[in-house]
Image 1 (spheres, rainbow, N blue to C red):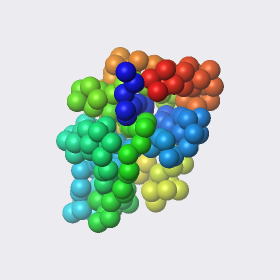
Image 2 (tube, helix red, strand yellow):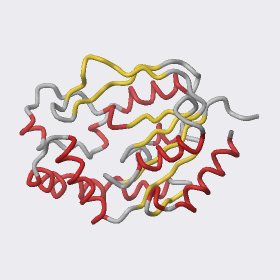
Image 3 (tube, rainbow, N blue to C red):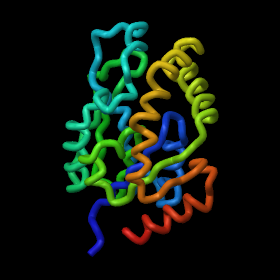
Length: 206
């Protein structure tokens, strides 16, 4: 018997192309009314008392930075076709906003994040586990562009954070979680054949 709701986990290093793959799946499956994307980034722990300059000294790439307890609770409700209200995280202030984002029941849930495969409770909820495998140079360049434009960071602060936290945490936690993946997708959405294979598996579950 087909499951009522399907959860697909899409992991990978920072700026590896997780969101691009997720959006490609949404497009191929018929749009946002059928598929919804939930980002692990929305579940960063609330740090309202840390000034921005001090926040750069906080390790956002460690598993403990995420409120996975709340994320698991929300996913369990969503898998029962219940409405959930996910946090809205402001990366400029390192704090959650007062408003939340409401997600109605969907047939397919795409959970994307750097450390979703590292957490066993999250893995156990997934029907398909995907790891986007993109080389480090490409990821660093993409992160520089994103953080400078979208998160009001300086080049120096992005590089400092990458060297101090992002790279060592990737090697310690993110990269090793690849062994839990059902599908490893090199080059992300640029890998058309790989995305098509993933889509075939999703359609089988549907």
